[in-house]
Length: 345
Ligand SMILES: Nc1ncnc2c1ncn2[C@@H]1O[C@H](COP(=O)(O)OP(=O)(O)OP(=O)(O)O)[C@@H](O)[C@H]1O
Ligand SMILES: [Mg+2]
Image (cartoon, rainbow, N blue to C red; front, side, top):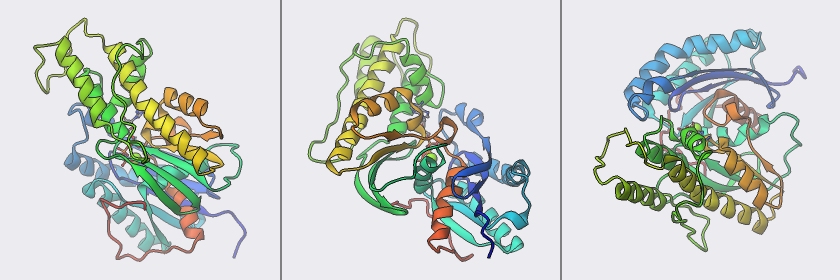
């Protein structure tokens, strides 16, 4: 057996990004090709599942080929294929998993199925020049479909502390963005609009859910809706154009402040109580700069977050999670199926 670092081909198609990546040694990205469908879905204000799987079918082989050529590797240089099995959209997941199985048979390579949320966690291993991870760490996953607070005690070992009881943080950003007539996805649009707003303009509610590490974002979302209706009595559901004069920056900034307050405070408290060495944040919402700043201000331990391109869905994080699963001996057979509702814990 050679001592060359492992090279893993990662494949990710759980939602609306078709991505393939080659990661070496679990840390070095040789390539990370991503075909995003965001412009297509923006027209509908959300991801259209049937269209997403059709686009994955068209994109998957060009993207795998692009990842291989950008990394300047041939099939003989690849040690295993890591692929997202779930959670995600069933039709989208099927495209990636079947492509991975086809390559595994054709090239005689081992197959490793990966949980998409574990992929988000392992985006933190791709932070350049970061120190080795000393467990336990607190992990906050904040994405379009999930908000989970975890204690990670070793590779692949998680204790669930809490999760959202209703909307995911990213989902709340997307819904409020739509309500305020901002472009999809709402997260980055709200962050941008909030730069010109006053975060104290409206005292939107914070759901502390004391004595638990759980979250809830439906109350703050409804409070924004009520405020918009109050200021805009003629508002009709599903109409995206907001009237001139509606204080969108103040509404955006006050909403964002309410969400960040709860996320940052509970995560910082969990880190202190459970003696974590570091706080990790991952998932699309971890791209939010005010969230990063607030978490760093409140936590008593260092906060690690992914580079911006690795916050949202990508295959490099799947390859890295697969690297550690492969080292732990995981090898999957061709009978594995997608798991659209797969929980991490
Ligand atoms: N700067 C930002 N501020 C707040 N939210 C953001 C920002 N950038 C992206 N988001 C949000 O991140 C979400 C997308 O993240 P991601 O791609 O990780 O989610 P997903 O893959 O759809 O969901 P999951 O990972 O739970 O399956 C969207 O809800 C988007 O609004
Ligand atoms: Mg995701």
